[in-house]
Amino acid sequence: MAAAAAAASGPAGSRSGDASAHDPEAVAARVIMEATASAHRPIRTLRCFLAVLGDQATGKSSWLSFLQESKFSAGYRMTSSPGLQVLTVVAEEEDAATAKERAAAGEALTRVEFHCLDTQGNEAFFPLNTGDVVWERADAVCLFYDVSVRDTFTSLSKWRRRLSEQAPAANDGFVLCNKMDLDDDMHAVDEEEARAFAEAQGLDFHACSVKDGTGVKEPLQALAARIARRFNETVEAAKAAASK
Picture 1 (cartoon, rainbow, N blue to C red):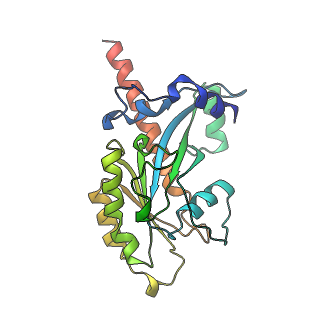
Picture 2 (cartoon, rainbow, N blue to C red):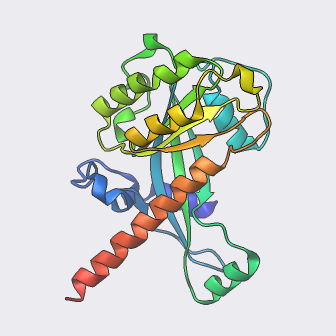
Picture 3 (cartoon, rainbow, N blue to C red):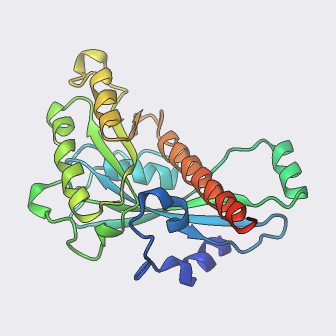
């Protein structure tokens, strides 16, 4: 984890005064943090600030906890203040043979360091820039709802609007439906409707069950792959421009 620590403390981690900080076409360039090298393979670490938004008791904090600890905690404790949790995701899954081949070729292993900004999920805690969390730094958003409580879905438009007011660059991300382990007759939101909403917002749609672990890791994995791809495209475009 030395690479992440070293990258986090480097000058690229600061975004104050960065003219590209709010350019939605330069996401990869905006989040880049160059790597240190491991003993066997170069490592490139990209940073993304992810705003995790949604009503209270939908499972946002449990989702983040599951990603951190790889298990579900049955004890519920309401988030009482904005929080920050750091999760590192390898941008592209590789089998052993592919990893060995790329390492031999000197290709960097790209990973994304997600700084997840967790909110309380209660109207009383607006505006979002309360506490020590700086919401305007968000690069992407996770809009989180409980499939069994329709109001948690209909309020996503409110959360999206509030974040857009403070972080207009947070155009990437996903809608995440939780509690898919519940019986179908308990579902209050149709998946087709939720997918249409996500598409209208320019976001991916994912469904999960934090309780049984189904679909928990896929949303960040997909987002990490997209961030890495944009970074690579930005690098190749810069090389092409420099060679002219």
